[in-house]
Image (tube, rainbow, N blue to C red; front, top):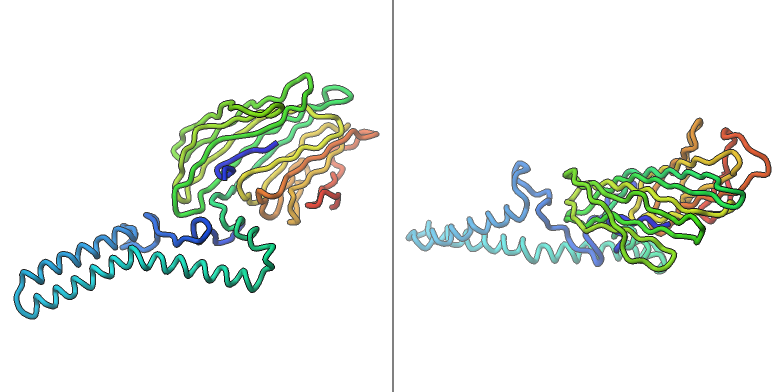
Length: 319
């Protein structure tokens, strides 16, 4: 199963991205921090400075003598400063950020790691809340029904508006009961709910997708999905999400007749609740990793209070 989010077409507490895209581009938007008492964005201030320069030039030509000459020269200087702020300053900062970043990568990391780091820094969305509940129910001696419900809150961490869509991809494994998407929708910052609809998909796959919308800087979109698949009694399910996710939570509801193991694809520690089958990764999940749940039939029923196995990032079992 692959659940897609706002940047699948396409951290923790890291201060990225400090530029928007690769190669780096200096951030210069309506939301920049340079303001007058928090009222005017930077581009408006530069326009105001340029307008003052033009007025000073005109006044300098209208006034005679030294005063006129001083006003004209000040106007020319002010206008040039505004033009530089709109052009050369932006390009210089872009090149500076890129050169500094490449210099750091070149000295600290091997060449093989650089593209991966750039990919991580290039993420424009951060999932700040992910709750996934996986319910396993035996159908017969050979199959189980896996029902998965997911709630996600994803934030735009860039300085510009970003596209978002509600989308999901699941598999149908050819059993008598087909796989089914019960729900796939997103809630925009203004409260608008957007439903995803079935789209053309390859055989044995089920795709849902919605129309695309945009959310602004620091705005959040909420995703809600529910689907079911039929699996064998001894099987594994793999989950992929499209955004880096802080402290994702998996809750596994399985009968005592099934043993299970789980993994987040990360080396970070996992905190398990004492009285409920809820497990939280104490770190960040990245889209190149995969969350997994592995189950099997127990030879003898086990108590729910027995500690379950954990899948390590390499797929092996460990505590």
